[in-house]
Amino acid sequence: MRRRVANLVLALVGLGLAGYGIWSITNPSFTCRGVEMHPGDVCHKNDFSQMGTDEVQTYEDRVHAARLSQPVVVISGLAMAAFAGYLMRQGEPTEEATT
Image 1 (cartoon, one colour):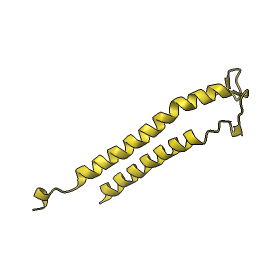
Image 2 (cartoon, rainbow, N blue to C red):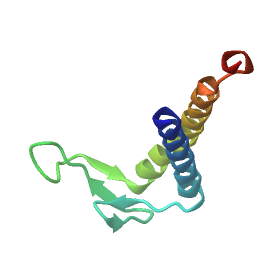
Image 3 (cartoon, rainbow, N blue to C red):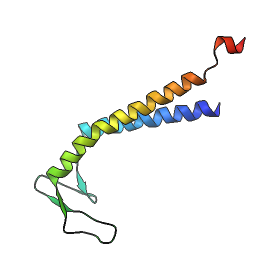
Image 4 (spheres, helix red, strand yellow):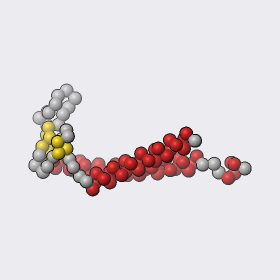
């Protein structure tokens, strides 16, 4: 029973991840540390030792990176849900095993 619930949770998380990916494709907004970016804006990248290094990322760079990652998020979520469905199907008792 616990395994079935865990697989169901995994499937729901996968569907949620795919849903988030689809939502982010249809509602794009790009931010730099919580501040919405617009065309022409730049964001100073941080590293682990200091805030605001000399390296910048443009709005266009952020859009490009998001466009590359969004399909990966959707496909990963769907794959996760499919795998959970497969695990649930494998966990079901067969007729031969119950008789």
